[in-house]
Amino acid sequence: MPDHDYHEVHDLQIRARTVLPARREDIEFTTADGVRLVGELALPEHGDPEATLVTFHPLPTEGGYMDSHLYKKASYRLPALADIAVLRFNTRGTSSPRGTSEGEFDGGEKEGYDVAAAVEFAVARNLPNRWMVGWSFGTELILKHGTKEPAASATEGAVLLSPPVKRAQRADLQAWAEDGRPLRVLVPEHDDFLKPPEAEEVFATCPQARLRAVDGAKHLWVGEKYTHLVLEDIASTVLGVPAELPTRWTGPAAQEPSQL
Image (tube, rainbow, N blue to C red):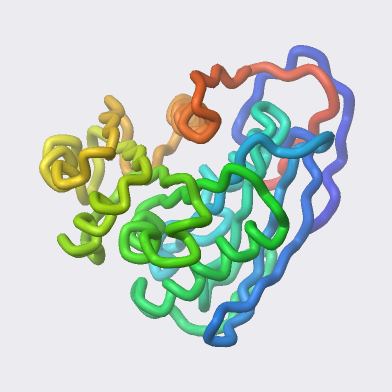
């Protein structure tokens, strides 16, 4: 990825296009069925991360990819604000400015290989306190494949953003219930697919699921108010303590040239 042009700033209001310092590198890894996937890893600029997000993006046939705005903003902010590493990648057949992952979209089935390969990459890099984070279609990948190895033993739990629960089956939810690892579920009040009352019913079979209904939010979490809320909730979940992410920044910063 191109280097960002950092400048020293004082008391800057963090906005959608704000880029904070991190060690960023383009990455590649190959799935067990031989598909090469491309992505990016963002690490704290100094020291080791306190936690790691392995992210799974929204539906690629509807425009979802590794740069879907919440994940790009997570990579821009969380390494600097919370010492959290962010691993983003394109699932099979998905393109972004970073490049195109090999293979073809398979509706969430062969993407199970992608889930396993991403987790294996994080393990191989010795990234600590690994959590899966899914958004929309990405939540289906976690529900369907997150209780299988290597994810079952190599991740601490999962955060689900706007879960449609269309592809995941009752057996997948039961597998999570038996697994017991924590599930944090953020459900927008005005979601297009699964609203909070229905989500309560769907996840009732998973006693460890903690649901948060977010007033006013929609499926895509558009707006800085909801971006901040989601990132702060994710940070609190994976760090295990309440995280209050700053909204202002003093130090090196850059600006993404195109609107997210």
